[in-house]
Length: 241
Image 1 (cartoon, rainbow, N blue to C red):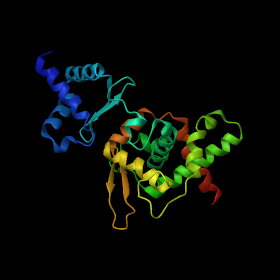
Image 2 (cartoon, rainbow, N blue to C red):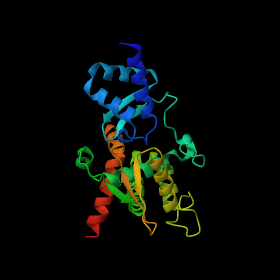
Image 3 (tube, rainbow, N blue to C red):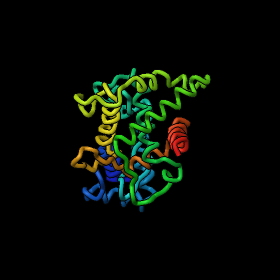
Image 4 (cartoon, one colour):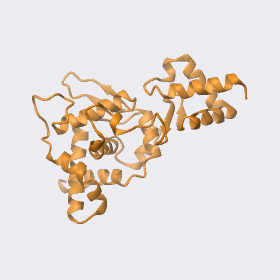
């Protein structure tokens, strides 16, 4: 192992800290990704550099670049308090439920998540909002039946259930209404490279899940709440069939 190898490995990890950067737009990044794929020794060095920073390599591909996960103690770890200044740790359950609804909308079945299809899934804000409503309705129903998991999420789903669907004079991304809350979370997913936005003239923008999102979500796919979000939507659709 040479000093330049460590330097190159560190550069690749550093690229991973810029989630919206893609190898196709940066020759250095593209070359480092190619080296990671071709050189087992370099791959091990990258993993060691990441581990030293309390990071882990979730995956690397020519399309996404390097996708990094974090340990809880890492300075790079995601916390709700870093989400946005107007979202506090007390809102962790609320934000988590919106994220689960978004995941279930983009990936309504496990086989879709496992697929490596080039076509990325997409959804509108309204579709994710509707999925969130169904998830919270399902949690409320389970809580009435004494389900312990639903009770743990009670603070989140009660807050969401109490929100009006939309407040016409409010900002598109505001916590005062359901539409705005979902917009707030989608903006964060865009800023962190997990979704792209196909803007529409009518304002009903299409959000497209990036391969980075699929790769990260696949690592955390065994989430009972995600299954509940998928199932709640199916139950509603079958009831209206």
